[in-house]
Length: 155
Image 1: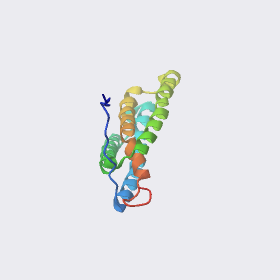
Image 2 (image 1 turned 30 degrees about the vertical axis):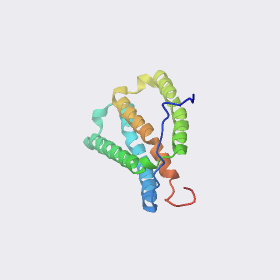
Image 3 (image 1 turned 180 degrees about the vertical axis):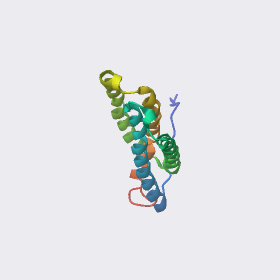
Image 4 (image 1 turned 120 degrees about the vertical axis):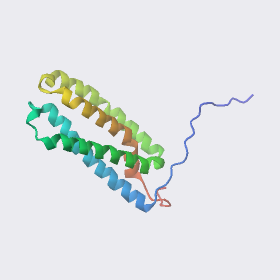
C-alpha cells in the first residue's frame, strides 16, 4: 500500500514581472521605505515630547496623511509584486523576521530604562501598526528588489 502525503502545500509558480513592472516595483519599494521612515518620526516625536499641545496643528494632519499614504503605497507594492514572490524572497523575509523579533526585547529594555521619559500613549499604537505593516509587506519588498524581467537569465 502506497503512503500518500497529505496537507502538502502547493504553491503556484511565481508570476514573472515585465521590465516596466520591475522598474516600478523597485521605485515603489524605495519610495515606500522613505515614507515609512518619515512616517515613523511622528509617533517617536510625540512619544519623546513633553507637551504635545505645543505642536503645530499641521503636525497631526501631516502624520495622518503620511500614514494613509504609507498604507496605500505598501498595499499597492504588495499587489504589484505579490504574485512574483519567490521562495528565496520568503526565506529572506523569514531571516529578517528572526532578526527583527529582537526588537521586542530592545523595546522592553527601552521601556524599563527610559519608560518614565516616554509618553507611550502617544507612540505605541503608531509604532505597533507601522511595525505590523513592515513585517506584512517584507516579502514583497524583497521580491521587488530581487525581481528580474520576464525572460531574463535570472528567471
